[in-house]
Amino acid sequence: MIKETNSAKSLNVHKQSVRNGKIDLFRFLFSVAIAIFHFNCSVKYPNEIFSKAYIAVEFFFLVSGYLMAKSISKLDKQNNIDVVKESLTFMKNKYLSFFPYHIFIVVITVAAWIPYFNLSLTDWAVKVANAIPAFLLLQMFGFNSADWLFPEWYLSAMIIVMFILTPVMIKYRRIYSYYIAPVVSLIAISIVFKYKDTLDVTTAWNGFVCLGLLRAFGEISLGFTIYAVAESGIIEKFNKYLLLLTELICYICIFIYMNKTLNPSIEISILFLFIIAVTISFSPKASCRFLNNKVIYFLGKISLPIYLCHSLVRYYITKNVWTHGGYASYLVFFLIITLVLSLICLLTVDGIKYLISKRKHIKETNI
Image (cartoon, rainbow, N blue to C red; front, side, top):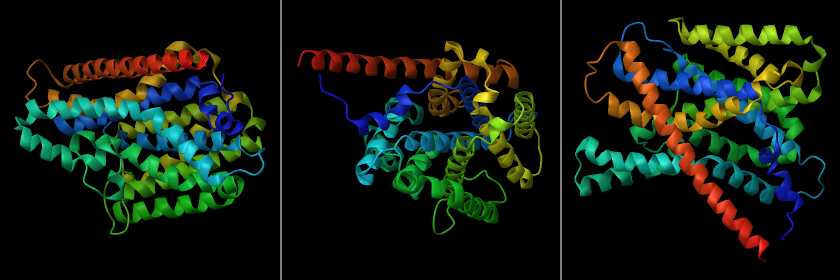
């Protein structure tokens, strides 16, 4: 057997870590909320739910920053770290964690374009060529994006920001997390608000950079600071029930905002509620053991396929006028089809990964 290096072990900690049931549950809830928000954008019914669920993306950026800082913190005790090598290894592992699911939906989407748009092979090839930046997750550099892959702006922004910040975090994690991140985060978010007065920005361009990229940069950096706060042990000094109550109030306020027509100017306050809630959700003292089970873990795992698959579903089912009932029945139908396609995506990708892993194990055993 070939021995694994200390470097590889340290940067594969995400595979060894225990899942957080509370975070997995909210991953699922917020991914469904985002799917409903995008569905609403296509159907335009009165009294829609989750009409401002774009704000849920803040949760995913903060969580991504926290988990990135947690993984990189494992390198603190190592000497003579090769920053470039460790950075590339971390990014490779991160990219491979979601890229197979991305490829699945890309293949399905590209195939679905032909009947949906009634395209000739030539027109289809041109459309595919124009969407290559989106397929490579480069759209947040300002390239054109395929509409059906639009929700993947989040993955593009996340991977670009992480690529930039990984070597900084490996080399100067504590300095950046404690001192620099809070400042640059406020600057980035304030620039977003200066141009749009809302956090609902994705590929909008301010002449220098995509505002969605600034949104990601600021909030992933805030995720680093959340980990620094957790690492300091400050949260553990508070009463458990006070933490749980505070967390519950924060999430309730966030869900109320997502369902009400309120002034977007309060979204900075909503972002602070997210920061408080995510900090508590990761705290061992505020853990809810009953959420640490296989069902919740599965919901957390399927949240990414839901995020990736829902756009394809909404384009197809909203192509024709819905005649089988009102908004509620239409929405339920959309969610059922989305969950079915997401389950197919999850089972297909995980099945292929399992077969590859098993084949690799057999090969290594025979060495």
